[in-house]
Length: 580
Image (tube, rainbow, N blue to C red; front, side, top):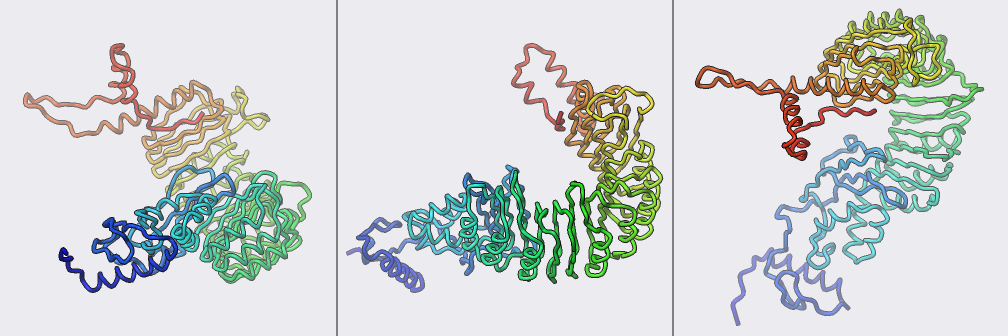
């Protein structure tokens, strides 16, 4: 009999406990061989260490965050990904959109997985490896994997239990019971996003309220012809009962009729497709951001002045306000300025054709710390832009004045020159021919041809879509990354100068073909000039070695017929994406 190696008491006790537990779990399954040494497992205590088991102690609790962000062919929940154990609820990774193919799953720290290696690994399948495989499965695949064995079922159960963020797309053929069965598996769910392709009502809210007691963020999106049949009273009861809800975003709210929302935890509220609301009561003292989008149907009887007065009495901490309605007028703006939200940083009043320069004067005199101002669809003129520049030169970083036909290129140039902190500007459909019903058709009326010269050090995004009267453009923006020139069909290639070395994307749909070629050429020249800044070396004879521009090198190689085409493609580098 060969002498056995010495086994420390702690290791022996742990091995004996694991063996007894394994035997109890497999009473009637016969004899098996040890997965470590190959000897018969019955009555055997293995002296070898576990395969690939982490040497650091395993956390006593499962991972704290599992985000669902991919889609399946049935209902769509994305694959589950784990986050670090110390990640708090308020710092969860923002989920990707449903149509985004980018995989932004966080890397998993293997030592943070609280998995019982004796249970979850059939054969030699390590627990961590099994977790990594199963977390990438869609919900239907995860449900099927749970039927394989006890270990896989236990791993899937822990995975559902640890989920904190879930995104589900519910197709027409799916029932609300299937959604409820998934939600019941995730008792710790904090963030939920539903994209519904069929009609839904208060039953959906009841299912969410029952299955997600710790829910903080809820987003309900509609797709296709789906109809939201939730009434205002049902929505108010849901918000008042969910005391931990901090963010609510809902689309298709055309059947609310009227509502009264009472919550001390709600900080973000987005409601869209509103129409003819009889009452709007917001008893939310901690509300910070509100977005109300009304449908553009005729006959809307909503009283916006009363709504604004109510917001001023009960929601004094508002920082971001967005209202999109055809009923916006100067009277509504006066009611908004009379409330005087002291913390207001973002103000967006969209589609208010009755908003004039007098409204801008009232806004600029009441709110002097705005960082974003959106007056798209209003009737303001260059004078209104001058008022904005006089009051907000030290704070305003985003200005949106699209669909404002009374603004000219001179006003846009003045605004960019007087707002040094400006990073985003949208001037779509401003410099356009008012006699043209279709901006896609070229306009040759010389009376409306305008030129624009913009020079800015911090501008990152500039939108000039639909400016059909613009025939000359000069841009000197070293930080510009996104440029929108869609439907600028009168812009001439010989009158275009772009000096933006960091430009990444240009939208040029509906423009002349020659204009697209000119844009691509100028961007390549700017990139080549920016790259050719390497240190010049002085040779032994006193001459300097100067790096040749990449464009010259490419043209020389492309003209050479003996140079292989494959090598030419390797040299070419796409520095900017042009969408035409």
